[in-house]
Length: 487
Image 1: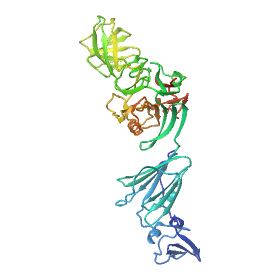
Image 2: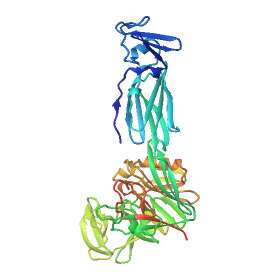
Image 3: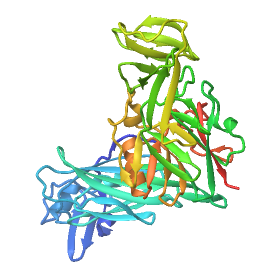
């Protein structure tokens, strides 16, 4: 739980944190260290050579003004603030203006649960920090503060530090995360939970299938939303599929099962597979309509507009100045001025108002050819990794809703290696750009984002593995990917 930033008020410091020996006798208290000695006399003040009017000690606690007067502290002072969560402590040091000290930044270095750092500042507020679950101790030297942090046991430990300007700040992030884990599901299949660094840690959940050991099928039915395990009760693993219209359950984009198209291309990247071969990219297709007299005419399809364009998704179609043939099956049942709200279960052909191709009541057949001709395909996008390169380009594919390419949300992806291993992956909230960088760093040969956010779900042997299931639990979806062991 995030506690927010809280100021740690500078207080008098314990003498033992400065390595001082304390002797109390006859109404006086004396502090000693390495030949240095200074005394405070009750009712009189500090003994020479100190100014008697300096603030008095509070028992064995010494004010910062006294420490500077005797030379125990010469480093510039920095004020400290902190925030604490269940897996991270953040310390923020507000640095003095004009100070030339530059603490060395650190990039996600591991530590064994106990972290000891030398900060080139006097940081008296550290004594007041009480983050839950983390023990904080400080020792003060003339030119530095020695900080020791003890995080909870049994965690994965990393820390990083960096500098900010205007105003100058030094930020230290100390992470104590739930351990990574993995388990064999059955021969050739392994489940893992691990951390990606974006640079914030993000939990990833994935199912790995070794080359030649897996068989993948698209599951679901257009127009019907169901929980993934209901679509394929016997699957070893299930991942949510592509995008769909939430109101009607209409798939948005290409969907091919067993060579039969269940939904036509929308214009984004798709996942293709045939036997053990997996790849992804923009579908190459040609579309045409066949008129009642047998003539055929090339047309655009959905977002790939042309003078004559076929629309297969419910919603507004056509532009001002056009007309729309409304088609059910292969028969034109009406013609309307555009834009027209295409209902579920119909398709439409938009055309310049002065150039109708047919009349109401006539037949109109839609013909779509897909390249390459594969057994299975499912459109989603955007494309993340291709031939080992990060090809994420948020403007390369048509997303009117920018959330899939920009939003901080749970992510879902299919990835694969050059050798043919296949991965179903979901993550805690992160951005697609960070997911692409992470998958490239992990060495994947190819990867494509599937539907994310509330739909992002990974099921293994009937159990939902990402705890929040995309924040909404077992959310019903329209399409999914089912993974089975090869006989």
